[in-house]
Length: 386
Image 1: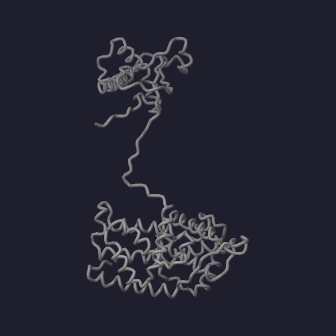
Image 2: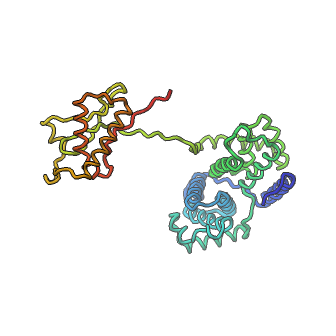
Image 3: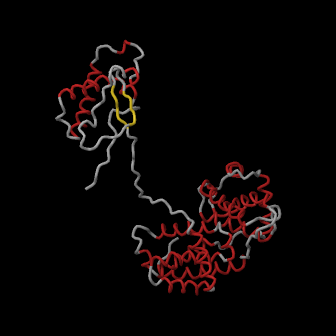
């Protein structure tokens, strides 16, 4: 449901207030510590690794980013409430992921438990995931609805666009949906950083928004101060969170542009015609653009013919050409003449022209039989742009 500008400006502060109240009620500081023994507790590296694994599952099953954000939130809340061993981490993570999927996704998008356990390679059976789900729900008091960092990111981005309509003027090819998708990718990348667990989700979302707004408008600081006051946050913590967030986002690989141009670079081969009716290619240096013999087939000597040419299976193939074969020969000759006219080689010597027509007519039948596996067209050459 969409609202007008006036209703939207009234609705956003209410949503922000409700999300902040929900976060204050549910949030608990959890920072994994480096354990002397791997069997004692879950290390920060293990926690980040399992979240990156859940991110891959989100892409594999084509789920919403809200599902991944809720799964990470449930995982951190559960690990803050209990002391789990690393051998149960995969089962805990896939159970939180399945709970988030059933909470966020539509029914037709929820993968079957057997399919999830099989395709995720979690090493757990469906029965073990069900038992772990019951344990997680008991520890979290069956309360899965909480404000995730992604919820705050959406609210802050909407508030910024409503108060600063000129926010995206420097990005003419990007609409608000594409812009928030870019910020969502950055946020999901930051979820796999244990150093940012010391901050609330609202603080992390505001740090990402502030880093992006700083690049777009000159009065970004005034906008961030307004958001900071509405969210009732400490400015010193925001500065610290911005520093860690910027450091972690520097490791994020830039996304591939949608209008990327890929240039085809073929192998440099010259076609060699043989009197037995076949084409063979061998690597060689490509002649210069001023050379008139660029597309002239090379005729091997008699001593080299057996090494370059492949003998026919039976002499019965060398019969008199039928009407169909004559038509094929005419088409190939016309095609070859067109190539010569394209490169201004119509004035080639008569002996060379006769030799070229002879070689092409002798090889036309085998080329047509091969179905395009070896093309009679020479390799493309780069064209200079004036």
